[in-house]
Length: 248
Image (cartoon, rainbow, N blue to C red):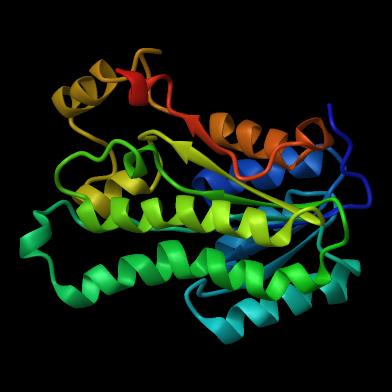
């Protein structure tokens, strides 16, 4: 397993779901972790379970709060080695033409601008060999009806990832993971129910060759790999973590 001892890792959206699993994955490999989330109480709870971690409150769409997050990481651990730009949120399922324009704009602020801001304010503190890993969605490649604005924002993350990879190379690698549907807070935000009805869940799984939805650990493991020395020659990679959904 890659060793992240003496490395500082920031995880946005670290209080739950994919982000919480990422925090644990990196901490288990020796990293000092900045658990950044709008839910400060949840971030503090996660940080308390890790050997060396601090919690930071952040609205990832806010420029000043991204600058403060980067400074908090430097103040606590002296540098930033990995940024997991993971925080994001879907909108309620609806047709694109029925969507409120302000909600459309919010999707890009939270899901796309957040990656830009994390890179903008963290990169100056990142030494050679550092890594940024963004969380996109397999829907960025293979959208389904009802989440057009969310998928469009996540699609922009793919282009941003590749553009940043070119601009920041060779000092900083920039990659992305593209998860398939997972039983996290996504369901509640998209549909208003904490768990999908059995028949809907079955329909989702039917489109995934591996026969199940993603788990937070799947996404954390892929993120960990892209950030590790084992992926030292990978940049601009947008890695499907989808159980084969994109080829179904």
